[in-house]
Length: 254
Image (cartoon, rainbow, N blue to C red; front, side, top):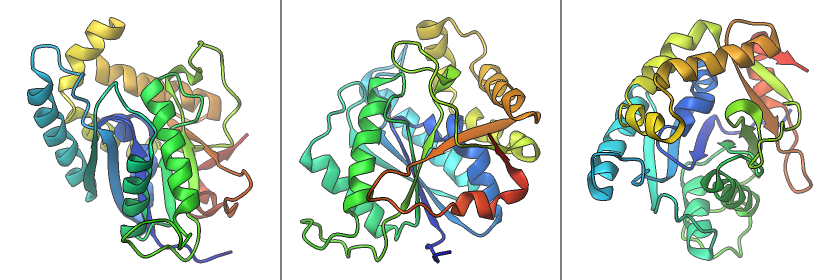
């Protein structure tokens, strides 16, 4: 088993995505000695109902910083525009720089066929950046990594793709029952999302719905609360099951 750096970077599209999709697992990994960096591609500026884009950006960055601080993690925003995220050379290089600078061993991001276009674009950018992070010809000011990071994909809401179809069975689940309160505490900082989710999805209780989602995944894994993942096993990526080994008592295979 290769010795990967104990540095994890979770790169998702919006400030509350890491908290919603993998904060329970990150909490468990933090307890195992991993350093965590939470990254959002955008500051979620379109996610304000009674605030301007500029005001919303300020609010959401503040929420994300507090949530990360609760975990003992660092928060970084890559300052792309919410709803107008494009895969281009500039953001690929910015993401490569970040992955290298953090001396990353493990990366979390969305699935490439997630329901949300910003999520799908983020996945594409992150996959490319992780693959190129070791290559010396990349025009980056940061030192190339010695080893390609492991790449894990998080689950979209309802386990559906952009057309509402059920997606492939996850590679594994993580039992987050003992850290569900910490997950919910991290989510609780994202108060701007309460009204947004009500307007977008007619969701009356955003936080409780996120808890219910963890329960739904738990039912699939036959535990009270769970999160689930796909490890990127395509050509060009390392295939060592590090998370599955480190969190073995919490892993439910399918």
